[in-house]
Image 1 (tube, helix red, strand yellow):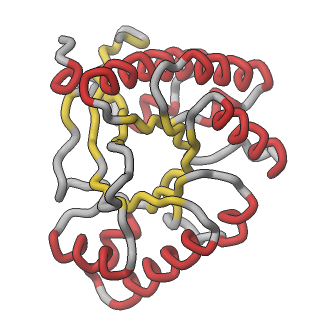
Image 2: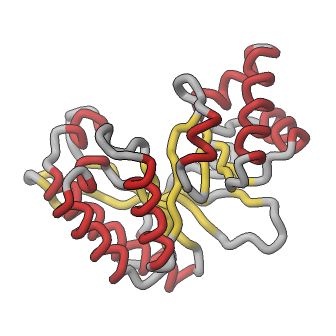
Length: 228
């Protein structure tokens, strides 16, 4: 795919889920072939351009699922759902997606109420998909939000995970996050797991689902779908 004459390739990073009957899942994302930093490139795109990328990744997610049975988690830029028209378009994409997907939200529009956000999450579930809150814990964690906003999954920021190697403060923080997420009845994914020691400690705390370089680097989605 090309956006603003920049070529984009899809990548996939599989989760490790230690629960016996859990579905096979992973994160699907794209990287622009650009000199510009990735985050800066994406922040410069319009809602329409972000929507085109999402539609394309949903097609790739279907190919990944058909080839491997693995479900994809895909980030939704907040500009896509900021307007009523954008939200309608997003839900149309969700309705037409042919494989189960988890839609990740780094944030929801600031002017939304809890009721507005939860209505969207309910509509996502109505179409056979799930929602996730990305990068939780990177700032000041809000355990009240975990109960009020009806995300299915909470993805803990890799910035928090790497901190557990630096002393007891990081471990205390992770233990608190585990209790808050569990008490809220949410699933979780711990991002940024990069060593066996970190993985082992997290399992002892009670975490079950992980994403990180310790389990494998992101691979081109073509390696799974066999489409080049």
